[in-house]
Image (tube, rainbow, N blue to C red):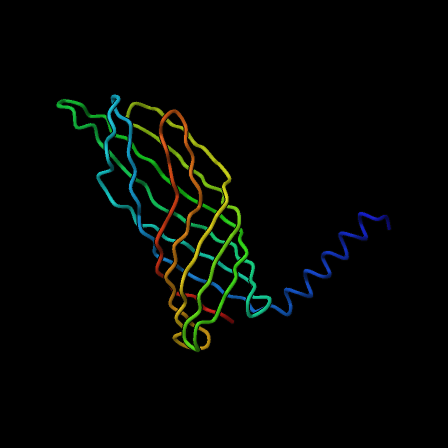
Length: 188
C-alpha cells in the first residue's frame, strides 16, 4: 500500500468514525423571494412576480458547537415584461444554489441557540426571453449566514436565518443571492 492509498484509507476511517459519533439533522426553510431587475431595451425593468423560494439542508453535529452542513435552494423564477406599447417581449431568470458550510452554534438559553455558517456556494442562474435568448451561468462564491434556533422539543427547532450566497457582476448588471429564511429543523 503506497502513501496516497494509506492516507486516503486513514482519512476515510477518521471521517467514518467522526460521522458515527455525530448527530444528524435536516431542515426545510421558506425564503424571501428577493427582487430581480431585467435590462430590456436598455431600461431596467423590475420583476412582476414574487416566486416561492425554498431551501432543504442536512448536517452532522460533531460537537455541541461544530457541525458540517450541505444544502440546496430552489429560489424560483422571476418574470418581467417590456412595458413599451406594442412590445410582447418577456424575460425570465431562475436561480438555484447548492452549498457546503461549517456551522458554529452558541447556546443563549435552554430554548434558544445562536448559529453562524461559513462555506462555499455554487450558484446557478439561467436566463431566457421570448425572442429565443437563453443563457446559463454557474459561479462559486463564499457563503455566510447567521440565525437563531428556538427549541420547540429536544428534536425539533424553529429557525430564522439570514444567508448570503454570493453575488456576481457583469456588464453593469449585478446579481446577489441573499435570503431571509424561516424554517424547521429536526435532529435525530
